[in-house]
Amino acid sequence: MSAGILAGIGRAGKALLLPVLLLAIWEYSAYTGSMPRYLIAPSQIVKTTLTMIASGELLTDTLHSLRRAYGGFVIGASLGVALGLLAGVSRPVAGFFDPLISLTYPVPKIAVLPILMSWLGLGDASKIAVIALGVFFPVFINAFYGTRSVSRLHVWSALNMGASQGQVFRKVVLPSAAPQVLTGLRIGLALSFIVMFAAEMVSARTGLGYLVMRAEDSLRFDLMYAAILAIGVLGFASDRILLVLRRRLLASRSAGHVDYV
Image (cartoon, rainbow, N blue to C red):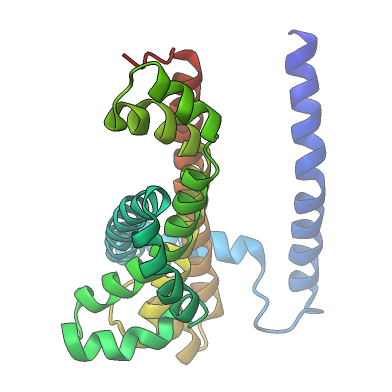
């Protein structure tokens, strides 16, 4: 086994030491009864989670939540990237969106849900819309500033070499703005789960957010923690997948050569 692998295992062990220690203290305290009733032992949470997986209940609610979160993310991210890039290269478009973003960005997105429900009904459409709204803002802002941060020298050099406006946008602007755009997508993905959870707690009869509310009403703290654990795992897995795609995309961009004409 190489020294690099051993070093990696050592770093991973150190990173896991504190969480494992905290879980052990939590488990022992719950077992001895020195913890409040609502702090269920981790082993009981895992047991409940496995039971729900076996019964299919957790899978059903998870699929409902994923459909809403990913649906809102795709819509909000698509609009955010497209309009952010457009505003970044067009001053009139930027001037139009600047006051709108400044006015609406601070508003908690879940506060808009009742309005969307009156427009779109009580089904998934209103929930997906409010998730898309939450995703849109960080993606738009990062795409906008990523485009604005492109070196003017690179743009002028490409134009002087005979590149068209479209070629400059594809070969210079997009590769330069890509890291910040992808950062915005990562933030937006996290927000899609946060807003999804809040929306399901407020106005849903399915999904992990609703499952948490139902568990709280019936004092099923093990069920509540199992649903929260499921949301955390889904969010973490989605973030890791996006990070892998981000690294591969940026690696392919840096490996390629720029050909303006």
